[in-house]
Each structure stands twice: as structure tokens, then as C-alpha cells.
Image (cartoon, rainbow, N blue to C red):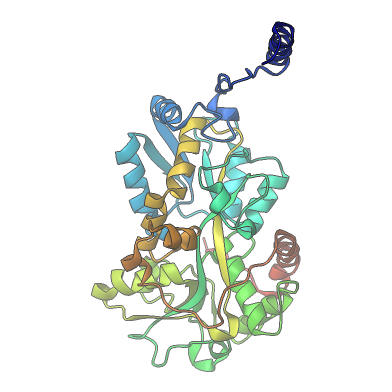
Length: 387
């Protein structure tokens, strides 16, 4: 048994530690919650219940460049609004990744500034380097694969897909299934790319990377992809239109290089509008990439922004991605813990080539610089409309 003197000494030491560290010998009070705008996790904001209340007090979330049919953003927005009572406004829904970054800078300090961003990985890395993004770890941040997130939690992927070729078989006699096919003379003026320019849209950037892999390039060498589109333009096959549903229905963009989750949606959505849309993932340029989520460091609705990211990363949000044929970033983890919707997952097409590999942030940055330097020199820009 310890002596009274020893016990007194132990108590004195303990009290000294409390004064220094704020922690009691047998435990202590949790750290005080911080304001949502500086919270790096829900726990730091006081827990999910506190974060939810703060978001509901803000009552609004401003996003940008989110189309309702894209990866089921319509279902996600509706689900978020119904669950939390926070109104979502999407500014410039047809914008690309670079436009999102531009909006963060343009509207800094204004109510209309975007709270949250969806960015191609190369654009997300650039925005992080510029100091535009707030570090925030969603509850399942630890389960997101290391190659699908920024180690400082300034961005992390939510969903992705494969570059695919879509084709309206009601207007094209034989649909192309490879990048090599796209150079055939029968496709003159038909081949469009989602987002039009790889300098502004992550989808177009991925198309160039896929074309590079199909033409002797690699994650370290995207130039063959730029050269391919130069040949496509020289052959007269390149169509500078944007293959959105409206242009497909009109017959303006009968062949589209696009994400598989968008092309697959066209199969169902456009069938009753005279379109027989066929989809293939080109085996000569199989390329997969995911889209990142991020929070504007100066978000006007910081609690709602963080709650939105928690919702997207939750099993509910991830399964809603599958409704739109997009592959959730937590798909493997959810399959293991039983939270994955197996019926929705079974609808995804199989892909040749085994487990996908992804370019590193350094490779993406290098590739983006090469595209920025050489794209307009190689591929004629879309002509301005005549006045």
C-alpha cells in the first residue's frame, strides 16, 4: 500500500499535468468545439449533431458545375435537401473544373461564392496548391484509398468511371469501339468530346489521357493523346460540339467520347427520343479517373459545406452514385461491410484489363502542363459564332 506521502505526491503530479495539458489523470473534458469554418472534421465542430444544427441555421449551400444527370447529382441534391432541410443552389451547372476555380477567386467574400467544388484530380491538386481549399476529413476519410485523396485532406475522390465511346446507332451504320476506329473516314464530323477542351474540363482531359494510352503514351507521356486529336481534327472527324443530351437528340454529336456513367445514362434516357445509344469502353485506351470533392476555404456556408461532404461520403450518398452508373470511391470498402447496394453495382459494365491504375498527382500536374502548352497548337479551337 502506498504511503500518504506518496499518494500526495501522485496527486500533486496529476494536478500539475492537468494545469499543463488540460487532461485529468483519469480522463477529462473533450476539447472545445471550433467554428465550422475552421473545423477539420465533424468532431472538431462539436460532432455531427452540432454540425447539422449549424448547417440548418445557415439554411443554404451553393455549388457550381453540377448537372442533375451527372453521377446522379439530382438524386443527391434532393436527398440532402430532404434529409437536412438545407437548400442547394447550383450556379453555372454546365461549367467545367477550371471555371469552378475561377468562380472561387471571382466571388471571394460574396454570398454567391461556391461553398463546395467538384473537380478533376489535376484541377483539385492545382486549387490545393493555390491555397483555395479547406482541409476537412469526412468520417470515412480513412477508408478512401490513399491514391484517391490528398494526404492533407484538402480534396478526396467521391466517384469515378471509365472513358467510353458512345454512339447513336440510328444515325451511324457501324459504331466505333476503339480509338483507332475513330479515325475512319465514315466518321467525318461526328466525334465529339464531353467538355470540349481538356484545359477546362476534367472529362475532356481524361479523354486525351485515354487516347495517349491507346497510341503508345503513358501516365508520364500524354503528348500522343494530343497528337491523336490533332489527327482526328486533320481528318475532319473532330466535332467541336459538346455531346450533351440535347445535341445528341438533334443529331449534332452522334459519337461522344465521354465517361461511361454519362454514356450509360443516355441509353435509358434517350431511347424514347429516337436515339439508339450504344456504349463501349475502348480496350486500346482503357482509362479510369475519379472526381474530387473539396470545400472552398472561404465558403459562405461553411457548416453546410462540411455536411454536404459528409453526405456524399456516407453509404447513402455513395449508393446514390450507383443510381447514375458512377463507381463510388468507397465501393470496395462498402462491399466488405455489407452497405453496398449489390443490385445497383451489378449494372456496371465489366472492364478488360483487370484492376485499374491511376496517375499520381505529380503525373497529373505534368500532363496538365503539357496539355495547356500544346493543345491549342495541335487541335484547332472551336470557332467563335458569327455575328
